[in-house]
Image 1 (cartoon, rainbow, N blue to C red):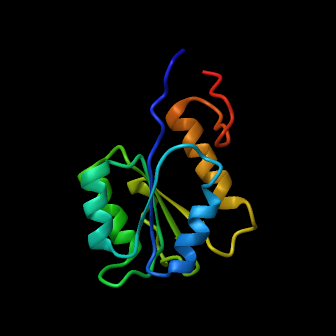
Image 2: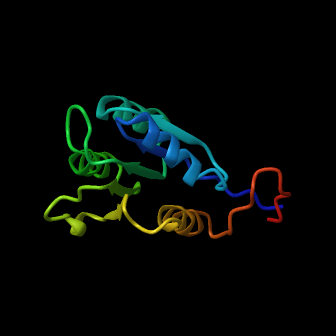
Length: 135
C-alpha cells in the first residue's frame, strides 16, 4: 500500500463564523485543518506546520489577507494560497500565484477549489473520513 502525505490546510479569518464555515467547506477532505484569527498566528502556524494550502480572508486585524498571502508565498513558495473575500481588492496580483474565491460565489465553489487543490497535491481523489484508503 502506498501512503500519500495528506495535505494540511490553514484557514485565516478574523471572523469566527467564517472560520467555522471554512472548516465545514473542507470537512470532507482528509488532512489536518488549522485555524488562525490573525496574521501573527497564521505566520506562526505556517512556520510550525508548513501547510500545503492557506485560505485567508481579506480583512484581518493587522494586515490585509492579500499581503499576508504574499508574505507566506515569500516564506514558502510551495504553499497554495487562496484569498477568500467578499471585498476583493481592485487589483489581485495573480502573477504571484494567489487564487481568488469570492464569498458571494455560488455554494460549492470553495469546496470545489479545495478539492481540486487536494487532488493536485496528492494525485488522488479525497476519501471521506471513515472510508477505507484504497491507495
